[in-house]
Image (cartoon, rainbow, N blue to C red; front, side, top):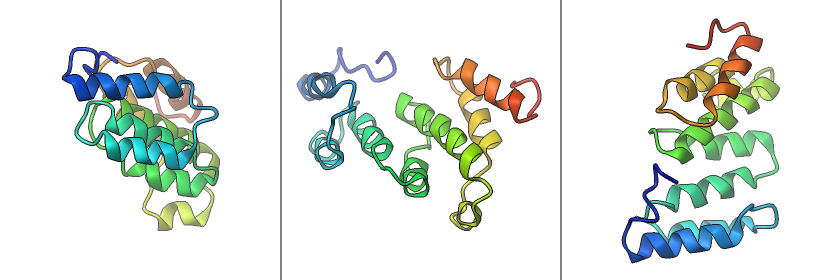
Length: 139
């Protein structure tokens, strides 16, 4: 939340934060509702987080990867999580011919992005995955 500045933002940011916390931990959140929240709070600090949660609710791994790919640019928390999840999906789906056809990068690439991003709680896990993949020292 520090990256989002949601608590110190304007009233719409604070309203978005309230909706975000109402849905936490998102296990029962409806994907369409999350998309509607992202649209309704477009321009706020948390719009990307709602889109991220909607993408993570996608059950099909390749469809989830495509939605995450559209969120993976940048260094905000939604982008960091999107890259982390793309790395995890890449470990599972890289042998699927569709992964390459869909122009998705390697798991190593996504984990390196997470590691190079500003300090984040996904970095240690990304470093461990990268080591497991033989991607060097993680840095």
